[in-house]
Length: 253
Image 1 (spheres, rainbow, N blue to C red):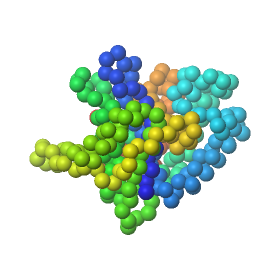
Image 2 (cartoon, rainbow, N blue to C red; image 1 turned 180 degrees about the horizontal axis):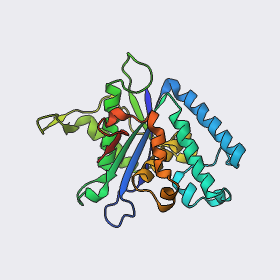
Image 3 (tube, rainbow, N blue to C red; image 1 turned 135 degrees about the vertical axis):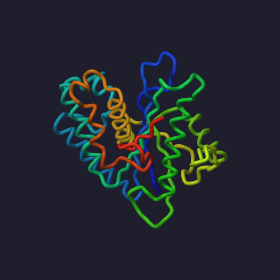
Image 4 (cartoon, rainbow, N blue to C red; image 1 turned 90 degrees about the vertical axis):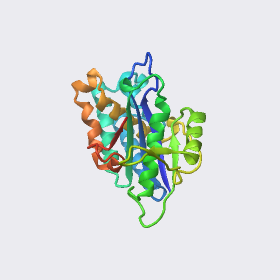
């Protein structure tokens, strides 16, 4: 069983939205390797506590860490940025982690497009496809299923979308410009929502989503520090089969 922990950056609004992109990142790990990854995250958090006094129970939320750090303002901003760089390097060093990313450019979408559904359907479909082709790092030679563990989101809407995709899921056919019905079969159960404050895996997905957003449209400070390149440090663990035509495996919509 593969578990995909998901978080987002940006928002789904089309009118009056301050963000150009809506981004989803899914951090995928097999159940057999879950404990190993968890221990690596614990070790990283202990290092943060030793060096910067960030407690294990403190949430690492990437955007507020830079812009609205609260009590973590005691840490100089350039060091808070360095924490995100270290986080990216940690994830990139994990052989049992794979990351699927989806980025919706809202400027090209008409008012009738449901950004939430567009992004989540793409993420779920890529998860399903990668499971079906046995392309995740992990046990080979067996059929693996998958489950979603998102941060708090529109629970009712997401689970309704998953139910619909299990019954009717039209996807473009290659070559003829038509569609074929391919209901998802490997992503099982409703999404199991998690509070990011209590999940290092969700916090990891949050860092990835933020770094992708800043890669696409960096803030002035991030651009000044060349931190828009931090996302590329994740290259070893990016699921490039999800979008083989993109050099970073980003599903661009």
